[in-house]
Figure (spheres, rainbow, N blue to C red):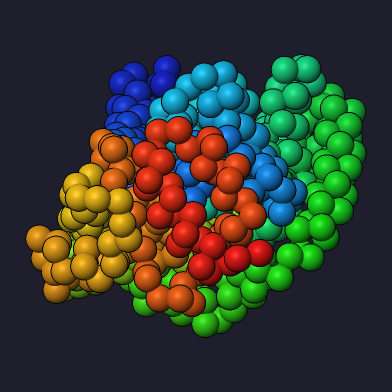
Length: 473
């Protein structure tokens, strides 16, 4: 009888390891297909405009992303350089405002997959099974925040090439340069990366013990890592002088914030349980263990879907960032712990099937709520005279007016002017209350109006009046 150990040499048992490899490849393809399909749907439907995304897109359209927003976040400059600057440069080169905004949204939607692609040249051919870890991260973590343009998306993406580059460091200039670049991107993405940061030197230490010939290259890499960390700490001290960022960070790392994460998106608990089960069963070689993983993990997702229905709330993809930056080091630690042995193909397939079911259930409902809201808003802004349409009026005009909305109150004026296909943007949707928040001041409006050439002048006049009534400075 052929044993179930996947480490069995292919020469001794032809076909068996290849079959296991096929299961792992099938698992990765399934995971990427589901995550990619959801990311594509988010981009095509404009979901990246959800929450802060409308503001981030709008400032690209008016050719002022650095001055209006990003200059206050120097410790997150990698997000600006990777996703914002290319779209801003295209805008300066003559691309229309709406097209530049869609380019930014496309770049942001593709972040998880760019990170996975960067892992390929860093992992030795005989260890390619380790690409399963970033694949799981894309589906389990990145997809949990589908559409929301959090800087943590770049943290999640860049962590894996940084980790695997340290773990498999080779003395070639190309691999070391790619590892260093990905490490810099990881550091300058979001402060939440500090929870996974210790895994990088730990990965280098494991490599140090394995290969004496690479120690010089590792010493140089770690020295440059230290310089990058010092530079990041300096820039973070500048960033943390902003009261708004301090307040946001305190909420993100509080126990109240963590409780809100689970309350708003209970599916993340099922995702966590699936990952823990995979850690326990995914490397077992006996038939019982593999059967439990292959069948038990999808059953977990099925039971969650049958027994629980999440209420759609606007914050569910916003506050989930707290869970993601805590779960990332757990998954990275598993990759270092288990990285020398290939996981069971059956267990990998069971895990991906479970995660795919959980993410489809959660995100398809979220997308449906978004489409309902987006279509009602588009109908209001593309008809009638230039005016302010009260947000409550839009909510009442939805196909399901009693359903929970994913409206983001302070961002609505900019969502009104960035929705794809909603031209000529006759109106803006906003909270008309005098105390409603505006990210801009009245003194900034002349420059904004001058560059928002895709919006009718009379509509921009309405926006200017709205902003100046709230922040006249």
